[in-house]
Image (tube, rainbow, N blue to C red):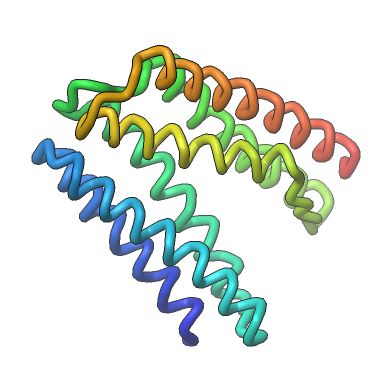
Length: 176
């Protein structure tokens, strides 16, 4: 166990606190917790690379922490008592992408016995816009943000989510 892995575990433990804050309709607290989780994500990656603390445990826990936070954000913001939420179709698309990637990766691993994971720019941009959309929706429940801006961010996020899904599909088919 090292500092990077501890930060990843902190992020995992922040997920229930984030969900509870949404359940009690506390968007400011939810935004603070989400921001702290985001900072731990940036720090754990930086520390792991900078101080050569990359571990197998970290490689497993980090994506679990990331996806737990993002997926729970989409689901629980949609089902919250907040005034501004994600549209249902957006939640389905965002979660379906992750399920699709997980299933595809599992199939490749089962068939080939290994999996070569290649992060790409579309995946990174998708993650950026998903995080931006969560922050925007939480902020829209705290202060005024024009509806057109919220919708634009959600549509751009959706576009990158779909594009990255097809890029990962193409990479997966090449591996097979």
